[in-house]
Image (cartoon, rainbow, N blue to C red; front, side, top):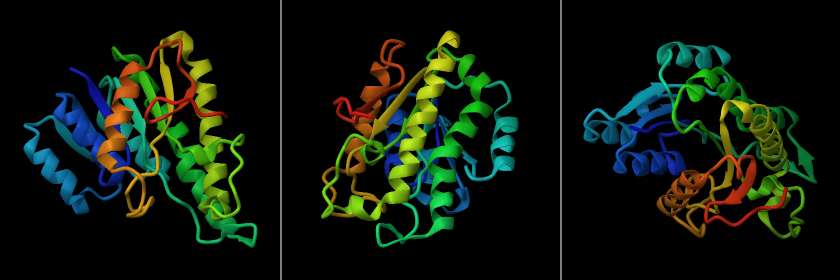
Length: 236
């Protein structure tokens, strides 16, 4: 039985991933900051026949990460999906930067996934699949030149944090290769979520379906690569 741990599983792409893996028969450890308010996730847990387990996790709090590790103990985790993320502060453009908001975005989007991965490294290495996944963004590509008329103009902190996430995860793909850990970095697409907005191109379900397929396809040869949810490579 495959065991999948997903952060930010209470809504959006995270919730859709939890549903997708549950429907495929996997055991899902669904993490979020406040399980008491995660109504949709609790409904999934009730309907899962015991295959969904909701655990509290604030990815910005190292004590919370340590507590999750203690709760999990030596349990093997086949697929660890670092999905939790934030868009960042209101002011993050060439017209002005919220410095504290920028640092908060870096902590959530770039540092937290690495800290959680380090904390759960042994759990990953005990598993059969050993897959470490980060939900990134094509905004994290420094090769793509975004026109100033796009929303990228107001996403400086978000873009920087996703580029930092890519760098950290790509480093882990090299450093943990000898342990058999396979790392995947994925752009979920422009998704109809609280972050992406109602006019986005695809639904959370469409994104999650593509992501699950891409994760299943991960191999040691493709570890550390940056791809779209539909499989297209993204330039660094």
